[in-house]
Image (cartoon, rainbow, N blue to C red; front, side, top):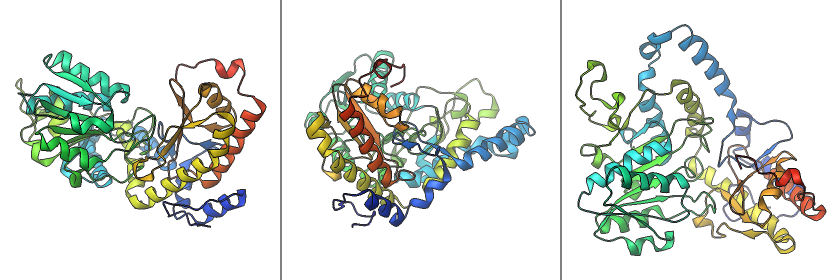
Length: 422
């Protein structure tokens, strides 16, 4: 049997094999740092990460002592004012950046708007933003928002990701892509695409929301210009956790972002009527830091900083590879189709399947305390967060799914009824 730290596992066929893999897993002890209800299989960390146990104590302390007792003094006493920079510096090591290039701020959507608008201004004589169709909706909506509110001369060009490089030309201001696709889990070659953008003088921005904490990242090595990412998926920062952004050092001096809020001022407490941008990454800040949310995020980030990225990647690939192989008989018998690349070099940390009855099937799984999710029109997503997903979870999930399909138990009104959140 192949150990869990390989990216090309041999096929194993029994339940005991998977239990043995868990015993060999060098990351197995990390599961104890998270709140996972007994009997629950959670394969949705690519959408919302689980609660770190330490976050409960941290939240209680922030609320009762720092806020409850310290009140406004805590901006100084407990250094709330530097939370964005402090957590950003920790995140820098996770995404392959310098500490002064990363900051925690706002939401992913707001950060996309700020940086896309700034990129357009840095390339004033160019009229195109290139992205891909089927990108995460917020990315497409925000880019169109930049066009409508900042510069209506901009044209949004959407082309399949495998054709992006050939469409970049001297009119391109910005190429904006998601590193790991939210539906298929396809991972793009960051370095090659960034190099192609730079060859034509365009800027490159990456959405790392489905990458950070799941796959090794090296923004500086890829020479990326800009990046954004969220804190509530693989970083386990909690629902609605603050997001982060990255600006390469070479752009910090020139970059001008449109949401010139108080916290982005060079001297916020001078209370000047005139805006003067902070000299570094702080200029990208806007409103007041959500202290409670940021404090929870820091707990998740601290856990992630203690793990070797390659160990995460090795386990992620092993989990996804075993899952794909276990699912092959169900694909043949019940009509599931793999939507995720078989090529490990271009696969993130999730596996997706299409099925005409995907929504109802996923609801039937969830009813058995096996939580994945569904994305319209027909995608079932299974996310593998290496910090806490076990190998035995794969075996139990596929066995439960096989039973659901064999018995047709998914075909019930309760499973077909659409919830607001899928």
